[in-house]
Image (tube, rainbow, N blue to C red):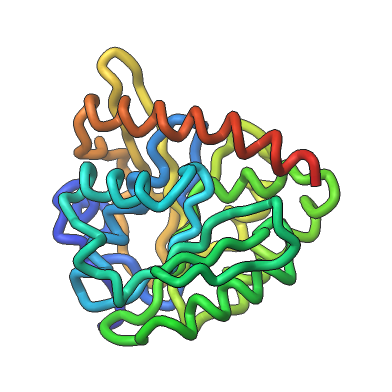
Length: 251
């Protein structure tokens, strides 16, 4: 197995041979353009193929929101995959990390050394079956709001996706702020997908810019998620960002 096919028509249309394993993918676009939801479709397919997933979903206040989002978007119930998932929960109130059990590790992911430690511990807890381990990080641009660690964590994110080819990475980042830094992350990745949104009705679109060593269609395609689901999830993400950014901005 050298690539992952989702079995979802609007994705398979533009990457007919799937997403290459042991590669890095950035899903980039303005705020509110559904980037993590696109990523969640790959997560669902990954788990169905027997792989494991490390979640770093920074825009959600707790794991329940991740579980609900994936259920609404893909129909997948994460509760059926508890032996295959670990949640890395952002907590800037602690200096290091705390393994809470129940698949949850709270970590101050703004700090590069904690980023490394948390990922290592999470990956060691998971089986490497099927396509292996997928690290799925969403809204990672929020970490760049730290006045102390922004440069260092940016460098760490780039080095992670460039150097580690033993795992697969999918990161979503917003271009609405820190555009120059986000451009560096885009450039470092093997694969790049761009998303955008239209209003009234709320619709999402994605375009594949590059896929490593596999064919792809660069034509824009509409994301097959209903406007009702999109609106509900967007409200949660918007609220969380208003809480997370001020907290990160203090360290």
